[in-house]
Length: 345
Ligand code: GLU
Picture 1 (spheres, rainbow, N blue to C red):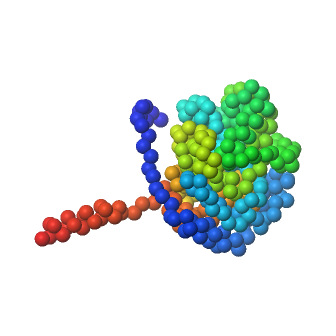
Picture 2 (cartoon, protein in one colour):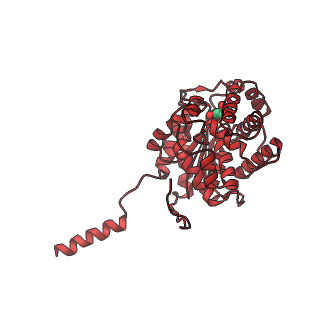
């Protein structure tokens, strides 16, 4: 799409969260309100994930001023899985820029499941977007590094900078997925056949499998998301992780494609960009305000955490995060009513 805005400065809309104590109360309320929900099922297509404790539930909000609110199991680690796609995409956008990444990976929804092979065939080999496995593999292939080991280290250190602490690989999850990821290998080979992956496709799958097996907790997800809400600076550590324009590039893709084939419904109901993963994590980002990180392993049929979605919806509504919500501006209303009084007198 040619928007013809080259050189035009990007102004940003702003907003504020309620007072700290109110945010704290709402995070606790969101946790208490959805704790009794036990519907959904733990993912088992990666065998080791089936062993997760289904009752775990953590909720965290990180504000762009660096304050973090928590309730429940916010320190329990789990594998980041698909949520890594958002942050590796940000890394690649930062390194290669908007245009190259849009052309190589794409930004449009496929409307098909995250591991669809048909979607690749239907789009002449184009991966379509970085939040489905095809696009995520194409994105990982673009991470700077002379060897897969260098690429992996770059991913690990960048995602650690987003989280504000050293993230480590869950060896058990990595091994379990490596033994069962034939489909991702097939997707990578198919992309190679279409010229969409230039390096060894199986090495790309290996780096991708590692990135999915990084261990995070709900608090990490909130801080990682808040870095995307804060123009690319981690609000807790103060470290710049990516350029500001990368945040917009990443969040717009999350809005369109972050919640699997439920992305439209998610935006309609909850109104903020988000990404979920099959281990039960969700990160949702309110630009300029902060982010929500949740963890609860029971998933719905689309692969999104049941409690996590509800807690995020509750917080989006009560904290005023929905980017599409508006109200009549008070000063405009006052001006119009005084105009009416003047014309009546
Ligand atoms: N590592 C998983 C896969 O590639 C991630 C899936 C997900 O979280 O959606 O199948």
